[in-house]
Structures are given as C-alpha cells and as structure tokens.
Image (tube, rainbow over the protein chains, first blue to last red):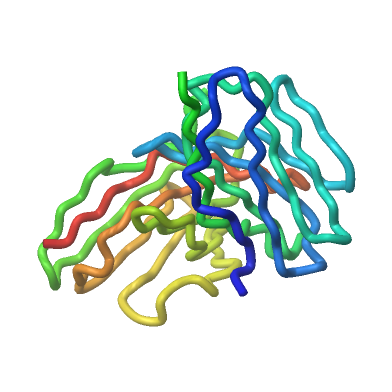
Length: 112
Length: 114
C-alpha cells in the first residue's frame, strides 16, 4: 500500500462544475495535510493546508479532512480551464521529521 | 522577495559524469528539502537539511548521491557517475523553520543523462 494514494485521472469536468479530488493516506498518526497544484513543466504550488477534521474554505477551494477514515479531499467550485493541472496531495507523517510525503497526483482537465 | 532559486534549469550530462544542482532558499528560510520527480509520478523525498546539518537523508540513494547546505552559499545536490536512471526533475523546497511546515518550491532542475 502506498503511503499517500491518489487516483491518477485524468478527471475531466466541464467549466463551471465542481471538481472533487480525493486522497487517502496510510499512517494514522499523520498530522498535517496539504494540496499542491502543479502545471505541466512547472514547480508545485501550495494551494491549501488543513490540520483538523472538517472543512476549510479558501475562495473556490475547500479542503476536507477525515482522520478516522484517513482521507483528505479538495473541492474546486466553479472550475475554470485555468484550473487544469495536476493536484498533489501531501502528508506530514511526523511533525519531528517535517518532510512531506506526496501522492502521485491527480490530473484535472476542465473542459471549456 | 525572491523565491526559491534553483540552477541550472536544465542540465545535460553523459553517463559517468558528475551533476551538481544548486538551490538558494527563500530569504529567511533555513530549511531545505530536495525531491526528485519522474515523469507522471509524484515527488519523492530525498533529503532534508538545515544550515551545516543533514537532518534526514532517508530518501537518498546510498551511493553516488550527496547533499550539503553550507553556512554560506546555496545547498548543493551532487550526483556522481550519473546513469540514465538519474534523469528526472529535481526540485528544491524551503521552509522558514518554525512550526510552519509549508514548503515553497523552486522551479526545478531537469537533469538529462545521455
């Protein structure tokens, strides 16, 4: 079992729809969770962080965390073609270690 | 306020040569991380350094790879005797070293081994 698992996609949604990206993790002791966006050929860019169960909203983005089920998700409302990218889920397994463990990413395609 | 600076952006080496990748963290950041990314794959952690110290190198291959972050100057990831399998994008990230675990990434170095 991978430490951080994501469906590779592509996930295709029409413009204006809600895109839902999911991620599961194996280490129940994980503390911090992040979503990064990576455009093709570019570096990852942090878009959301979440540390406690529930929802966290930032503009069109909502991160959801359920530690009991060991999953974290990212919702993108009113999807735009410019949201087309690979979304990487990252988990900090150990606050002492600090280095993030990344999933392999989900490719999102927003169709105009 | 410059971000994380990596150079070179592209590096071509022949098998058996050495590759040296450089990373200057964001101003005020004292923690540096190196990750490797193969096509269509996620980022694989390699090493985590603070100034003059290697904190975690659990992701580094045991041979040919080394990293440093000297008191002055950039962090260096060094790959000796490169092989074709070393071809990948190498990303450096930095963080401020407080409770903030958020990483900020550089533009990466694309290493191609011929």
